[in-house]
Length: 465
Image (cartoon, rainbow, N blue to C red):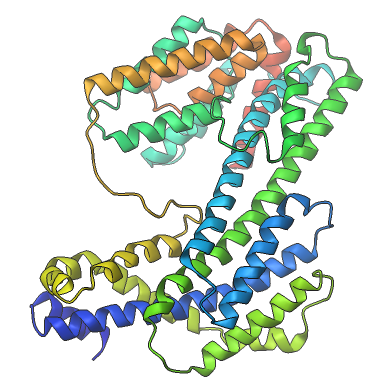
């Protein structure tokens, strides 16, 4: 029976026992086959990525890579040593390191903002914009050039995030408070997401592991916090800018590497989840994929110094087209999961399949584009209460207050600008926005900062043309 017929019978309550078992078998087999195909391709791509980098560039990732290769080897052996717990531990370790990398990225972006505002002192090639009215008109046209409210809102936040910040802390806290008030009718998950965005972009998010992982970025952030930005020399500016640029490039490289690793780990996790329930039948396609993975594993263990043999590339080419059809099948099964549960709940419980069906939402998350998604999140909607909103607002403002005490004026302005870029749009009319942009540029008495901001905004608008 094909999938469509099976799902129709489940909807009608027909042959539920056989069809519920059939649905589970199809989900397990399709997920396994898809994960094996995708894993072979991702592992191949990862090898090419690792091959391009030096040992020094891979230093932070060596431990993770070794654990990954151990897991791939265990999967190939099929001796039961690849467990959900083992892969889950590795996956969580990668997520932990990614959180640290993200935190350092946010910190360095704050200092990049600060350095950008003093650049006109040392860069004579930056343009002047003597006609403020014309410049504001361009900004307004850029924001409203598309008839798409979500895009317009993102462009408003993008522009606001680059304009000079000239307001008291009290006024800033008023904006923060008003932004929180927009979550009165939201659920707690949405509010928590907003708080996380504010904390991360403001250097307030300090995930576990920052004292242990990527400590060179910690040292750089501490050096940047001690710089006297009012009295920078051209030589100091050049040195600091180069250090910041090199660190940003390194972080981008490491993030790309960890993304590639996690993609393989997610497929290993799917394989570990479904293997205990796989039908015992051999497949030449799966045998070919295991041979590809085994060969790549050996090349990795030899130091990833050899080019991938043409024969191995040819084996991978033989699998082309399979992955797409398998993904379509998986998507159909996932899309009907809730309906299958609703129709077959009693049969699932009676036949002891509750735990088996519980892994299918986990598989769906592992197949999604959210490579670092949490796997055990319960989708429970809890409304925001007046008490929880007030507490969250007060906590956020208190955190900002302490942060502003600890940092220099330029850093605090950068934090305010970054925070504005994450806040919901707070302007009631298009004219309110124009007024804010005009006041921001007019009230900025620092010609250098205003010139820097206008050059950055000009480059943003030019890129979209």
